[in-house]
Amino acid sequence: MERLELLEVNEDKVIYKYYPETEKEKFGVVSVNRKTGERKIEKLFEGYGTEYAFHALRRLEHYISKGSFPVSGGTAWY
Image (tube, rainbow, N blue to C red):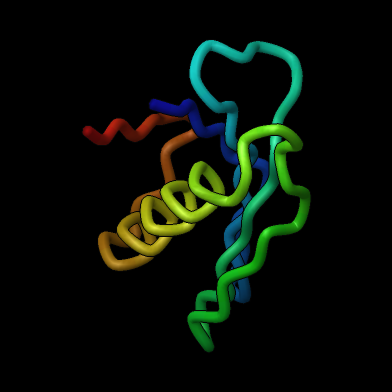
C-alpha cells in the first residue's frame, strides 16, 4: 500500500510523491510524460527498491488515461 500526493501537472507531464506503507515524512517522486508516455523515477525511496515506484507509475498512467489528477490518492496490491 502507498499514498500518492500531486506535486505538479501540466500539459507535458504529471509528477507525484509516493509514500510507501505508513511513511509520513520520507517519500519518493515519480513522473510520466503525458505526450510520450515516458516513465521516470525522479527520486527513489531508499530501502524499498523500485516496487513502490513502479506501482505509483502505473497509477499515474491510469490518471492520465482518465484525464483526472487527484490531489491525493493511493494504491494497494496483494
